[in-house]
Image (tube, rainbow, N blue to C red; front, top):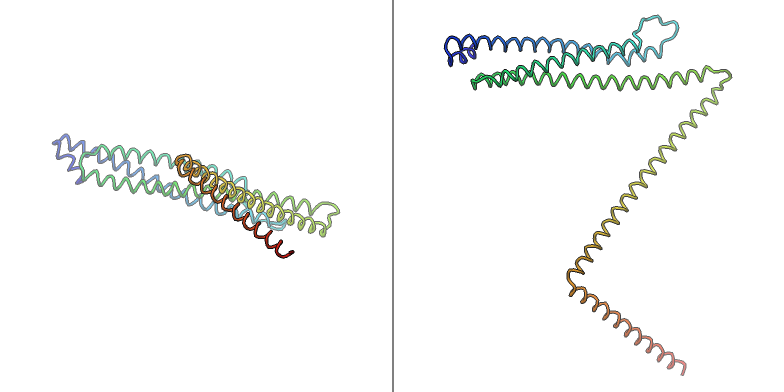
Length: 265
């Protein structure tokens, strides 16, 4: 009411009627947003219950024998319900996003700063609720898909085992040996993968070290080419070291020969 009065103060009687109409439009949008949020809340609760009950239902189906007459919702029915509910929730999220966009347009068109701040605060609350619902929907959907894939994989493995056990002339001992051999093969594959990973890491490390050495060598060559005086000085020092080594070797050889001659004579 205060917001409508603030808008009406700038334009007389006609402005008051326009402000009241704008206020009604805003309240209409808020009412639609709250209604969609309530529907989304109920849908998400049902969606979460469906996803939670999926794995339990499949587990019960896996343990169910001929004497169990409890009615169960099979996997295909749950999949259809999941797809239907996911489409409905996505449509509600799209509608709520459209309402928030309309509220944002109305907020941007408001000219009173105090009214604009209040509207922005309300709009931000609705946006936060939309973001939470969207995050919860995607998280629940991802969990359901992961559980369904895992259950399908486990179901196919369980069927293969049952069909293998129910075959004619199957020896349980042989089955156990096959399973142990399969486990050994899996362990061998895992060890081979670890060894390959270690070898690849070693190769990358050696490649990195070789690159570093090449970089150091190139830098040294660059410095030597950049400072020819230093390069020539290093060469003279090396030549002098070689000469000193030759002189020292000659002196040691002559002394050794003289000592041998003195020892024999």
